[in-house]
Length: 507
Image 1 (cartoon, rainbow, N blue to C red):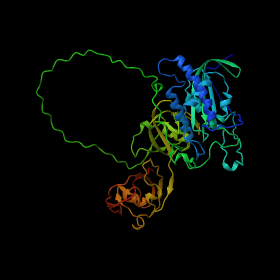
Image 2: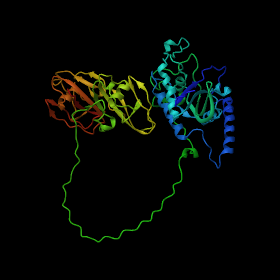
Image 3: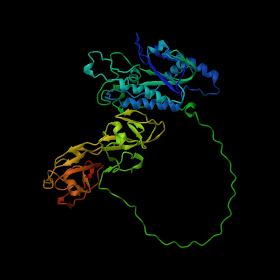
C-alpha cells in the first residue's frame, strides 16, 4: 500500500468516567507510583552508574511546557482563570509507561479516570514534539467558545470539525500539570495498518479536562478570577504562583561531553628591535553625533523586515502601504514574530491592519525560544524552533482631542512599552489660556501639559490644527520654559508624573 513520506495522527480520549479522583488523592498517587516502580526497575537493569535515561530530552520538555503556557495565555476570547502549567515528573513516568506499550489507544484505563491524555504518532521525516502540540491546538479553528449566556446550565458542544478535544484539553483552565514521553515503536498498529519505527508521543494532564457540558475556561479579564491559592499573581495572562525549583539532574546535560584541551606548541617570537616612537599629532576630541527626528512614524515597504530597522524609542511606529497581503515577504511565528519577518505582513497576520495598510506599533523581545506557524487573515506564517529575537505588533488608534487634553489623561508613562494614540488637534488652540491648557517645558514636556498647545509650541502643527504623534517618556528633574511659535511655556523643577515628546505626522 502506498504511504506518504510523512504522516501524523492525533487522538484524544473523550469518554466520560464514572468517578473522579482528586489530583493529589492517595488513589492517584498509588496508580502513578506503580508505573514509577516499573520504570525504575527497568532503568536499573539497563543503565550504568547513577544516570537514569529519560523518555524525553530536557530541551523537548522545556519546549513543550513553554508552548503550552504561551498558547494558554493567548486564548481568544480571553480567559479570566487560566492557570500556569508546570511539568510533572510522575505524569511523565506514567506517559513513558504507556508509550512503551506501543498501543495506538488511550490508556491505561484505570489511570484515565484521573488524568487527561493527548496522543500523536508519526513516521517519516522528523517532527518535534512541539509540532504535535501546535497541531492539537490548531483544532481551535473548528471550535466556538460557549459564552455564559449559552450555558443553561450545560454548555453546548461547538466543534464543527472532526475533533476539538485536543485543543480544549490544552486550554482547560484548571489543568495545571503536564508530563509527556516520546518512544520509537518498532511496530505499532494504527487503525488497522502496521507502522514500523513510528515515533509515539503521549502527554498526560492533571487535573483532567474535557468535562462534557462545561466550557474550558471562564471568559473575562486575564487573571481576574484566579483561585485564591495564586495570591493574585499574574504572569503572561496566567494565574501564577512561581515555577518550582527543579534539582539539577544528569539528564539536564544530555549532550555535554568533557572537553579535552588541545595542547599546541607555540614558538615564542624573537623580540623586535626597539624603535623610538614618533610623536603623534594630537587630535581634536570628538563628541558622538546625536540625531533627533521630527517623525515618530517611518514609512516602510511590504518587504521591510524588523531586523532592517533601527532600534530606540523613535523606531517603534511604522506606516504600512496597501496590498501587502499579496506580497511574497515571509512571516515566522504567531503573536511573537521573528525579526526576519515582514513587519506589515506580520501586522496583517495578527489582525492589526488589513490589505489597505495603516499604522503599526512594535515592541521588541530578545531571545524568544521558538516561533509557531499559523494561517490568519490570509497570511500563512512559518515555524522556527530556534531561539531568536522577536517582536510584537499593536494597533495604533487615532483619537480626536480638544485643546485642554493633557498627556496624562490619555497616555501616561509606564515602565512597560506604551502604545500612545495618534491625536488630532482642533484649530485655535494657540489662544487658549495657559491656566486651562498649560505647556510645561521645551522639546520635552511634562505630561500635565496640553498636547495640542505643546505641539504648537514645538512647531509640529500650525494654528489650524492637525495630527500629532506622541511618545510617553519618564519624568525629567526639571523643565525649562520658552516662547516659541507664539506659545509661552512654563519652567518647573517640582514636576510629578511622566513627560512626553510630540512629532510631526507626514502628509
